[in-house]
Image (cartoon, rainbow, N blue to C red; front, side, top):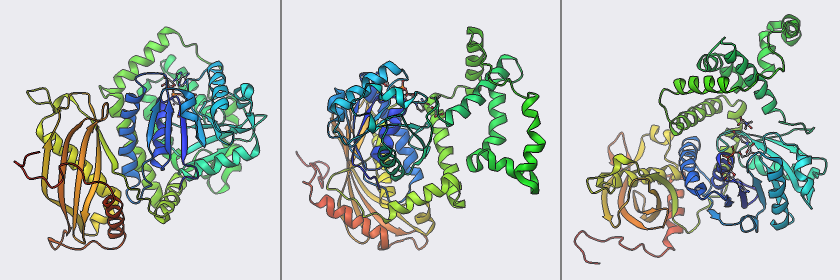
Length: 487
Ligand SMILES: NC(=O)C1=CN([C@@H]2O[C@H](COP(=O)(O)OP(=O)(O)OC[C@H]3O[C@@H](n4cnc5c(N)ncnc54)[C@H](O)[C@@H]3O)[C@@H](O)[C@H]2O)C=CC1
Ligand SMILES: C[N+](C)(C)CC(=O)CC(=O)[O-]
């Protein structure tokens, strides 16, 4: 479980958005400052992917979702924060200015972390009055799935800051690695850049296309790297004689040279055009959002496969999940917010509003999210138990339009051994308008016997805890209403 509870993220783009998701999914309340007026909407789309991925990765017990607030000033965001994650654009002058402002407004004991991909922490902390609390915490995209975070201290970083940061990121299911000496681009990006530089040469010299290079990687060493990295794989490639034999056999070719070494190809317009056109052809019409979903689903599958083998990033995932399962269940007296969706064109009817059955789709997905939250996962289904929805009442209260983001608040109205009575409110996120409610009765069933049976064990405990927490909330307007009733 997270060691801290209040975070601030400064800059909510690709990386800041990933941090917000990882923090909130681990129960931290997150305040965000980003001057872009579109930042919150962009984050909403990223969070949809992150929620989908986290739901698939952690299909059992999960921490409560922390609250996320976009605020209008940096000072407001960092007030009361225990960890501030700076994730603004990669410019030293800008970051120095932002870090000085964070330093002036954040509580003195807060950790100040920078997501920089390569700037030196000693330079970043130059404008800070409390430089000892600055640490580079360099993540990898998507932050909500990739575990590594490189921790790099500057000349004036306190060793205690590194240790606090290490404990904090580890508790989020991440793999913090302390890079002992500060160098530009640290370790991960040094390696990636060497490969990228060589790939640019190969494209420029018409040796291979963008797609062919990606195929070379994903059909060969890409498969090996996820589980054993570089050196251990080469050790095995040395045969029984191991690394010494490998070095003797392949060391000399470093001098031939096989590579263009460190020359950097000039990024001419022609080379940029060539790479962009080849990349467009490779994508074959798949949008960035679709590609993100494919990437995330594959990452989840790889992590889960490694988890079964108890190896590498999978062993880390296993330990993290065990920690979550062992942690006391956090069941605050507030509705669950587990499902969100954006209204696409094909959800609209001839009036230009969301058509009826799409409400049922959103409600059904929200019910699935609640069940997953309660522990309905593949293993539970395989054990021959599930839930069936046996009754539904939908009220249509407002009009949703294309592009609206919908968020669902879910409540347990009541539960007994076999029944689960749910109530969902679908709200438009922009203004909180209530568009529809759904009330549903579900039965817990033995799918082989085809009859309702009592829940048991962890499932029964989680339902009881949630029902007890929600029992303290005021009854939602419209719950139990019959069709045709007034008011
Ligand atoms: N994109 C990547 O693959 C990775 C990026 N990083 C690092 O993360 C940091 C952010 O990069 P991205 O998220 O990719 O960039 P981005 O461009 O997606 O996001 C940057 C965000 O910062 C906001 N911003 C601009 N000025 C600001 C200010 N004065 N105060 C607060 N926010 C401000 C922008 O509106 C934007 O939303 C950079 O330091 C980058 O090197 C680290 C790992 C991977
Ligand atoms: C391209 N990049 C240097 C910003 C990449 C990273 O920093 C890490 C990553 O996610 O590959």
